[in-house]
Amino acid sequence: MKAGAVIVSLHDVAPPFTATIRSQLALLKGAGIERCVLNVVPHWHGEHVLTDDSALVALLQAEAAAGNQIALHGLTHSPHGPLRGALLSRVRGQVFAPGAAEFLTVSEGEARRAVQVGQDILARAGLGHPSVFCPPGWLMTPDAVRGVLSAGISTIAGMFSVRRNGAVTWIPSMGHMGSGYEPGVRLLNGITWLSWARRSRVVSVYLHPQHFSEVEQEPLLAMLSDMIRSGWRTATYEELPDA
Ligand SMILES: [Zn+2]
Image 1 (cartoon, rainbow, N blue to C red):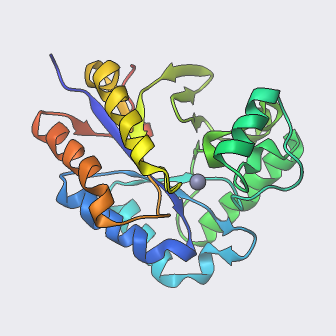
Image 2: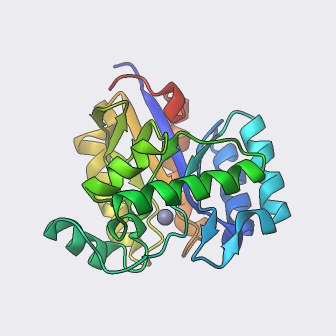
């Protein structure tokens, strides 16, 4: 069977995690991952502006120049008010992304404005105007989707989906959640690989900087190394093949 493409995403790229992001990039390169997607939070928790961290800005400029993709990962990665939207989304936000589901708390206009402010910060950091958006916690309301699209975003990366120019592609997803419950996530990764991912044309692998340790990453990095050795190639959303 022909091997597919793997899109590796680093989440929560923001000043509090600069050292960890640097370590993750080095480990990924060691595993043969040539390029990845960097999910940047321009104004982490409304406290840390990307442009204030010159070391992170320089790192991201170098990674972008080397072919890695800069994506927008919310504006603050924190709620702007009470959770909105469908009950199931609100429950997911409460359980899986407490304090993170920014785009479950905004109106259409607020979502558009948050993207514009985030893109302005990235442009000031010399990182262009990304057209890929990954909502914090992979959660957003339909209103927020409309707002984000109206700000010029063409690609929305969900946990198990990619929406590009209106068409949704479902893709398997595995990774390091950074939640402190990694044994359960590793079990899910194994089930996802056996049941779906190994036969898929595109697979998403995510890393978070929280609760990060080299030892904990070993199974994930070993899986990525194996995939590369078996002929899988790394891709960004720009080069996403049709699944
Ligand atoms: Zn995040």
